[in-house]
Image 1 (tube, rainbow, N blue to C red):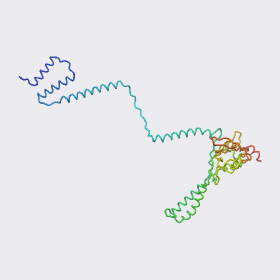
Image 2: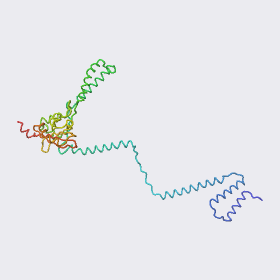
Image 3: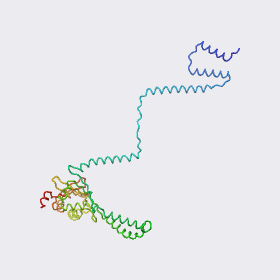
Image 4: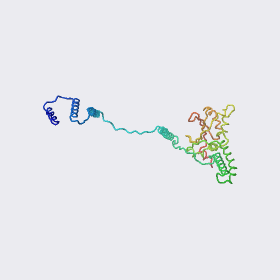
Length: 330
């Protein structure tokens, strides 16, 4: 007599409970369950999942479990991770622009700190030469600017581009010679040299500076026209250009700046700073007496080396003191 399907399951479960099963691995259990499912499908005629798909799913679950265990072990064995630091990204082009700027600021700060003692030493304070005079204005720039402006507006008015066509002839008539004169003056222009004046020397200038020293200071601190260099006549007589015992004209010293100061004995001094690449200090020392005689009377000249290699200083010391001035006045 054939048993029905429920009776068959009941008999099998009772047999399993009665007889203890030996130890079976997971792979063998999966294989047996697959065989049972195949038997059940054949008996009942229903469709179930294939054994290969079940094996793949179980393998994936096992791999996931193993990976999870390895991650948990690794996380417990690793030391504590420090918080991530944030960094500022600066483009390379901007960095190239900022480095020279920082370098420039650093050099400016160093020059300010280093130049402050030279600007103020003791009671000496450097006074800028900001006095306005017509001699400090370039007539070449003024004439050239006016001439070019009149010429430009005159041509524009002549071709009816600008208003005032009736004045175009006058503008062209005066604009052309003004432009020519301005260019000529600009070509023959000799710029003034810088003058450094200390406060104590400025106080003694009116009383202790000789008329020749005052004239020298005024001549070299204004625009000159037609001269190749400042103090050209004086240097020509002192160094004797092209004569026996003199120097070639191309080796002539060039005046670069002047300085007003007071010596330790209280005398007023005008320092002439020359640049001479082809001369030595001995060339100036041999002509020290000529400097004294040319810029005299009441002048004592001293020659010395400048701050750089090709600079030489000629100190014109005034022998006029405040006591002599007060005694000479009635």
